[in-house]
View (cartoon, one colour):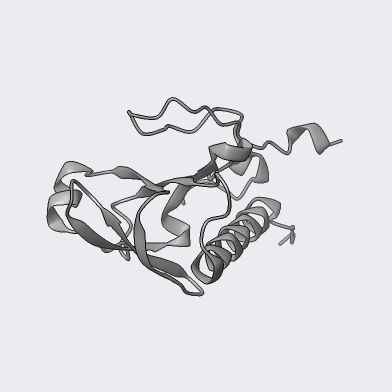
Length: 155
């Protein structure tokens, strides 16, 4: 059996570590300047905890905005917890990092997209490349962000 380096999973782990660092800085110091985040996550992930009415409305994925009002941001090793305001109703959320599909900070045109692959497929790093597609944004957003792609650095 041949051993290979799974660059796709290693990159995803590193990118999730970056998200964790950013969220920890925000938990410790607040959001600096115009920074804010659009975080899209898989609501079907078994460890995601959201209110039943949110899960009913967003059966597959949900995008939240961390900007003007948020509370109780707690950053853990595998997930983060945050309370966000939905129509004047504060709702606690628990989001594992591996449930995150996109993380975008449009104030600096930074974005990450996590591609998933079927578990039946053989591990192929090319199946987990970062996409150059712009991640979906909330309907009320007029800000565009660019997704970072590592393809230009490949030889």
